[in-house]
Image (cartoon, rainbow, N blue to C red):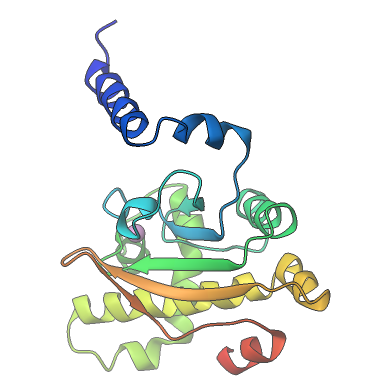
Length: 206
Ligand code: CO
């Protein structure tokens, strides 16, 4: 049973290190979680949610999928969102895309990838709607990166339009949705200035 022994060894070192700094860290986490933020990001291995915003275990509730999509019939994503808003009473939802997203590149290509093409179809839909703006960019890289940004805004709107967030706003629960984009090339996040805290904010973005 030598499989993945390096990873398990890493885990033991990590847990020991944290316990040394804060002996009650794990025992107090085991009692409850009270994160203030929900992260909806891409599955890309280069965009590790907690790490890039310096948050510890217990501080960030996370949902990741290919190309950080929020689809109205995705029970997995909606369940995470509902638990975060209704039970954990999370105040901030961060939708985080990233430049050079493989999911977005694949959506624009003509090569078939199997089942995932149905998932990526949602990105193609955005591309088709915003085609005239995207074609103003001369290089493919620029078009992909702009589409990565457009996708973030689109998903912020989708979060805002879920029954979960709409109902939270109706009962005056504070929930703010933020749209961010991450650059793998320098490790920096950019706020897309797409902050939504109410139905009227959402209408402005749409
Ligand atoms: Co990606």
